[in-house]
Image (cartoon, rainbow, N blue to C red; front, top):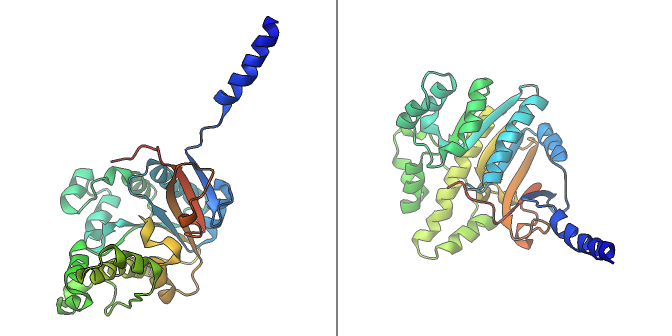
Length: 284
């Protein structure tokens, strides 16, 4: 009897303790599970890969450095990196860091680093150590602020030497894109009409700098907030105007109560979607 009771106890207890804890899951656009190997294989075939992150997500940052290293190996060094987190007028300081001419303290004093720079430093250091180009793609924030307060026309008054930090003017703009409409609805006031335009200036500038640095046979891996590449809009809308033949792959990171189920609102946001458990600690 004791043996039977012990066996019953084991049958009841073991399954509860043997459940796999899954902090994240990779799925396709429709929510079907895919392997990291498949994601990496398809990324290596692309001219440009957009990693749409959640800025404070530890899993996203871990996968970014993992993918950087694995793509570098798979592409035999034919890799280019770029990020929203670095602005065009800080490119000189960034390049000096990549060449080993200044250290982190020197970079911090000469460039506008994000508060969570520590999350991006591993990719930057890998680029430095392996002589990988790392492109500062984003528009300086002061110009996005100008558009937010006064529309695109505010940019016309800029001196020519400042326009070098932007996408070529005038910036095309499609207010019917769902992501821009959604942003417009976030701020229904008159000024709110300029909010998606400021976003568009960022998207256009990032697309322009990516297009300028894409090379045949290379993969350009770009790190940006998920909103900039969700639903193949944002940066991609502009990049397709500049490089219509480019092979593009998108990745989105979403948070969910249960990684086994892709939230309906996240369906078809990207070619690959990384579902992260919402209880994953944030990095800041």
